[in-house]
Length: 378
Image (tube, rainbow, N blue to C red; front, side):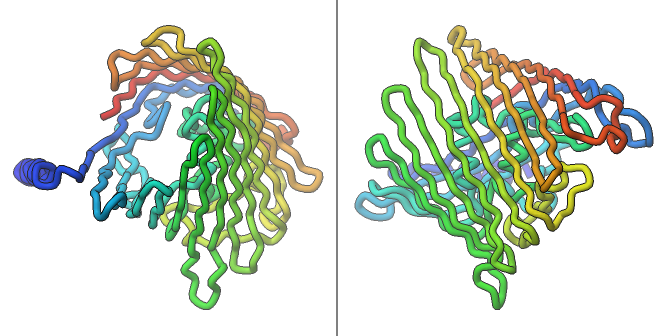
């Protein structure tokens, strides 16, 4: 194994020398910490209890990847990206069936933009993870807590824009993005690859973004079709503005599944569709269900080494007369030990309302937690 790695490294160095206009980079994030929750469901029957545990990807999902570009013609570059999630706690892959579960794409780019083909992130994921409409930039989305009857991410945007709803990534996609001055635009189409039904499992996405003078605004739409032509829709809108070192961020996400909607399994291989109805007590899987997440928060670079963020999220699930709401307050601090390594701490509280307590595994409908962790990037 060691000889193989040495050979690969030597080959990579020879390629970079022989082709000065090409590049290939090995990169990654390793993130792990300790998490405490006050209200976690027990495996056995009974009320919930507190739990302190090792947490994989406490702040961000751990990953490694390879990306590269190469000049192929005047002003045109070819690019590729392969990215895989992992769990530092045991060294396992984050996906049991897909080696490159986060991204596997090849594409071309020039002054008019980029076109990528393969398994790619959605525009909703891009604008949220980039801190454009989320003050935490999809941090704290690997931490499920029990607040009421259903575990939800501390950052509920990780639920709305996640693998459980097939809204974070798509297989078999064509994704275009271009930037023209302060305006960026994008369009993506994903093939369902269902024999005899070209629309089943297909999706279309649109993105628009404006950035100038400390202001960033972004909007996305996403329509995912099932085998009967019913569409799950997702829309996002929000932005941020920075003044005197303080960044104010706000955003909204709206998800809707129509009555009778059944997701096509191949849309995101390696993931199982859950659907927003699972967050409602007594809900029917086949009835129209809505989910909304609204967020607002502040980020402040206290010193060159210390970054502070505070955020508030409200996530609401609705189906006919049923309604469940999760309200979350979170505060996070990151201390940069070096350019590529952070120590971080986080505290949060989530309260659920509108639930049937008798059907809950917990005596309480709230959860308080804290996380301490370490992140290294390479």
